[in-house]
Every structure is written in C-alpha cells, then in structure tokens.
Image (cartoon, rainbow, N blue to C red; front, side):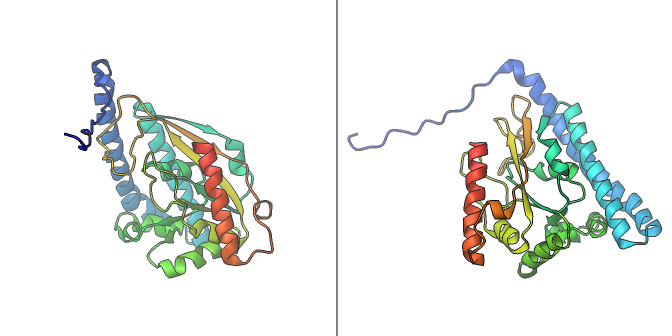
Length: 272
C-alpha cells in the first residue's frame, strides 16, 4: 500500500551450534559463581567479621582489615570466574594504581561486576553503597567495618564524599550513577565532577570495556550468557590534576560543568 511503512525486520545473531557446549558451560559456571558469591558473603558476615569486631578493637585498624578482606574476596571471585571459563580479563596501566593515596577514582559502568574488579584493584578506596546493602543483615557488618559511604541520605552524600577526600582518602565513583546502556552514549551526572572541584582531589580515570556481546549488562539477566567468552579490558590511566583540566578562576557551578564535560569527552574518546 502506498505510504505504508515497510515492516521492521529484527536481525538476530545466527545460531552457531558448535559454540553451544561452551555456552552451556558458561551458564552453569556463571550460576555457580554467583551462588559462591552469596554463600561467601554469608560466611564472611557470620563467621569472619564477628571475630574482627572481637579482636580488632581500634576502628581504624578494623577498617583496614575489613577492606583488605573484601578486596581479597573479590579477587578470589574474579579468579574463580576466570578459572571456570566464564570470562577473561586484562588490566593495563596497573602501575598507575599505586601512584597516589588521595584520588578520586572514576570509571564507566558497563556491567554488574565492574565494582568487583575495581575494589579488587583498589581495596583501600572508599565506596558508595546503596541503602539496601547497608541494611542487609549479612552485609551490614562488612560495610560498617569497612566504613563505606551509604547513599541513604543524598543531601549529605556529596559533603561526606568531599570530606573523605579532603581527609586524605581515595574515593571510587561511577559518574553515570548506574550501568550504561549498550549502544548509547555515556551520560555523566555532575556529582563526581562537583566532588572533584570541591575537594581539589587528583582524578584517576579508569575505563572498562567488555567485548561484544556484553556480559551482565543493564536490563540483561545473568543467565543470558553470550556465545563467546567475554573479555574485560580495564585500563588505568595516568592521574590528572584538577589544575591541568580547568582554570582556577571559575566559580563552582561553572567549574563543575566544565570538568564534567571534559571527563565525558575523555571517556567517550577512549571507549568509542
């Protein structure tokens, strides 16, 4: 019929039968990994952290022990997924991870396990955790001992992050606020840039890429494993000083907008 739009044809990737055994194995491997993650968190929360509370009385020492334990557990989890053939990974620029202890570490957020990779690399960094995690009976002791930052009060969150950085700590943030949508441009919220401007902290950019098709992406359940084993490529870039990125005579709002735009352009250039 004249004027009628042609039907939309959905293009699906071809079914490749000889890749099916590997896909089935990664399905069970992914499920096993997440079961182990949950049971491991339960075990640590019930049996390990009570002993930390009992024998490590100093809160600062307890924080160090707790964060190192979390970093070690995440490293084991990644090693398990790699060993099971669920994924592979490569880290570039690891020498930049130890350049400074007072940095705002910012990264894009393509998959569910990005934070697992980053905490394993930066175990002593502060992290922002959701209120649901803080209230989880099995995770409460972990995040409380590690003194992670709760996002339950957005009005205080910005000030708390700035205070932690100004005290000499490092802070890990995802400027997007949530996982990015595959095929769409990155959308950085101004929060991370505002924290950087207000604290004056050095910025350490980390780019994360996962080969197509992406594993554990937004809106995709864990059981939809790809036909090929995904490769996570993590690149830790050299740190950037705030003075090298924006003029010092800009007021807070303008400096935040300028820095947020520059960070968005930097990540877009590195990733696309």
